[in-house]
Image 1 (cartoon, rainbow, N blue to C red):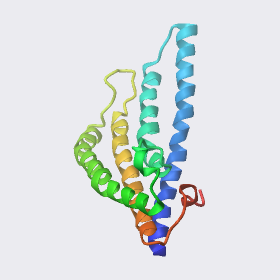
Image 2: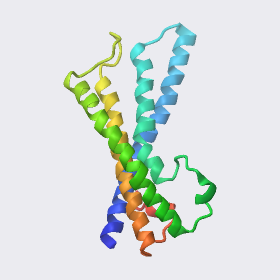
Image 3: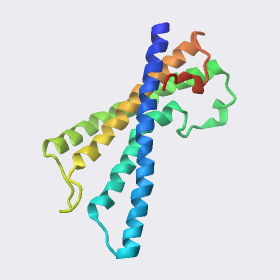
Length: 180
């Protein structure tokens, strides 16, 4: 059981690191947006590449941090019954939710996104604007980052749930992420 716990914690740590890295996109987003507003206000000028960079930062922030958000229970959940359940019942709900909803949805997204992203990489797709960012293939790759980070976090949630169900783990969410 120690190997399962270590694996789950390792996945938690991966998503913790991804979340901390992607959180810098929020600061970048605010600073770039402020710069765009100031450029428009002071000089009535805009730079398409800088404006497009906002889309990239939004993508990194929301798609890249999905696994991190799942790690910290930040996703919307119907909490009417869940909040009143004991730890073991919550573990069953989390395990079944991962197996029945999370994994199939992520597999569906991944399977359908893969050719879309691969084609973009094959042609090194760029912006439709001449002075835009010519790295649209990286933007589209964020879909696969979302699938990857959320899928591995789903595995960690499933492993933690199995450990709770079997009586080997009674850790709160804050105690799960160590060493980051």
